[in-house]
Image 1 (cartoon, rainbow, N blue to C red):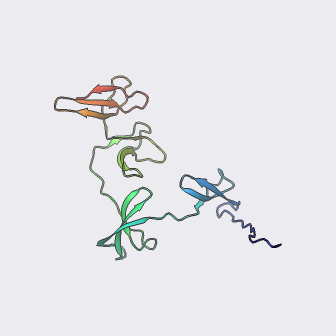
Image 2 (cartoon, rainbow, N blue to C red):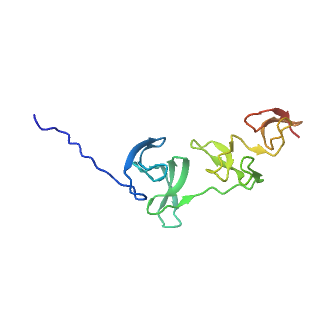
Length: 179
């Protein structure tokens, strides 16, 4: 057999933003095409389309297009979306809870809000994400730490008489009695 069964064909794609050659790169979400002129050009395109696993068909209809709504599992947990996706991109958003607005101690411009992580676990993060990456694993309380004067604390435990608080500063973590 003199002829090879596999033929190598090199195909080059060029960046639509700057014209440089696109390269296959590996990231935490899988393979993607990225511009070879990075960091001057930040163009990227995923090689695989993000898939949402359909868990259940719901009895309700989409208010935008009238198609059936579905319970889906995505990269950031479960959500309700339109079955006509990507033609219709309707998604049911949770109604925000009315809570006391706590200013972010890291950037001083954003506020801490409840969020859900990839596995559905709740945490509190800054509204200016991704510019400010401050986050806490539990609900913060505006109590000043007696040791480092950090403005936030986390509830460690409580009973009828008192609360045990922990400083939210990652370098301090002092445990003290709350009011």
